[in-house]
Length: 293
Image (cartoon, rainbow, N blue to C red; front, side, top):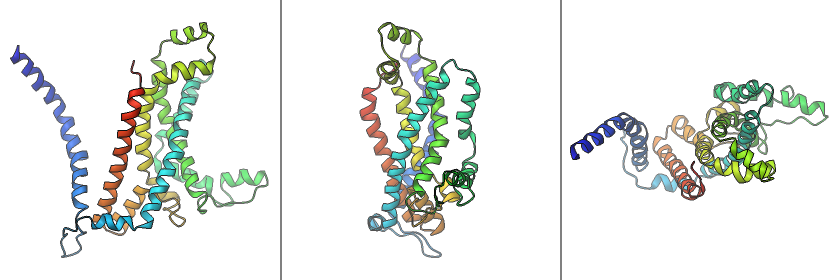
């Protein structure tokens, strides 16, 4: 019996080995290496990297662009995550019903997801173009003044938030639609017999059962909100005056424009810490309130 259990355990670990090797090679090792390099200086020419301790982190504390990028990223996350999830749930409920053209609606909602990010950025760049862009044509039709949406510090970040919501909501809709299709129609019939309204049925029955999906989508939405680079490069390049600079874009600038790999490693470590802490808090508090069928 012990020999059989040992064979089962060895077989299980062998099946996990390919995924574990990929995870170690492309996730854990880069994270540890980044943390290690953040304690060294950037090698330049014939001068090798030297140990500087927490000097890069001390520079970060006094870096105003870092703090602005971090706050921009927090505002970006607060603007995209709740609205994307709410819109995804609404679209999933809509296309899950028996309506005419349901297949076309599903395709329409999911289409932004499959478009390349650079293509999406260029499409919306045309929408936001001053004077002759689509948005300018609409506002001009109603007699509103022209506005440079991507060139104004007050609207540049909001314009990027709108693009992110448009692209991500359809992706999240697929997960909610799959979850809704797994639910028994008996639940709706029982709620109707009890006299529950549609809102009561959604809030008291559907939404609690959708919590596992919501927890999964929340983690993915959080990661997506902190890894946006493509749209910023095409649409704003972090401007004007760093008003739309997000943390990963600033890391890209420091690492590949300023060639300061050590400081970029320190910034990346902070980004990983923010993502890890937030994910831990979500799993810690939301998982207890999640009902798994």
